[in-house]
Image 1 (spheres, rainbow, N blue to C red):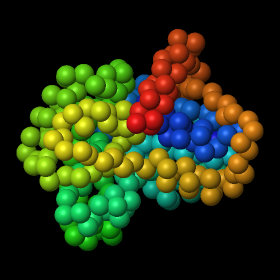
Image 2: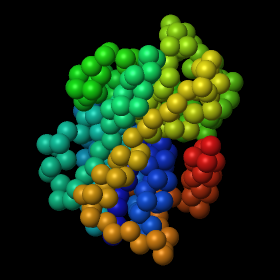
Image 3: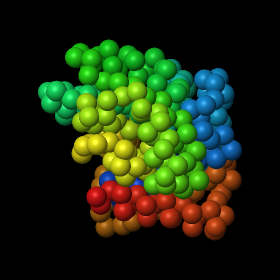
Length: 259
């Protein structure tokens, strides 16, 4: 089985990382649209154009299913849009439902951090209408985190200064959890921990997305073999140097998810 996974950049590697563990024996194609990152600062029509180009590319590679490993792209790629393609397409959305179920009775608040497009999109607000009955969830756009991630800057003083500035109007003691509503944000858990005064929990949509992929792709587990991955940057197969950089990101993810 061959699965296509794409994101605006390297954020979706956290989704690929989870998929490789849950779906050994699978062949993956990972597509990072490095020419157009970050999506969260583009118009909806621009993003739809990028998505269409990527989906056509992955279909040409004869994939059996596709994961949109980008909350921003999923927020503009409607079901009707995705229905025009001949393979199952699984999107992502901020894991608000899971966070509410886990923490709604604690008396604390939940912060959803995402890109401006995701924060402003109908998809997220419709989700909040359904699950946030007690109005415990606050939204915060953090567009610069994508740029930090793309240059491999995860725990610097500059990152922490940025987070403190963007959250200065919030009473951080009120929060128990952060929903990481952009796959790039998974790399910044330590920086978030340093900013919040108390222990903070993180919730992302990776597990739910891959579980849905397994359901729609009807993938049988094959624990005896390792997953195989081919990497592309905006339609071009990566160089050996770029592949080495990707492997560094994957090692960072290994380190992060062991904590």
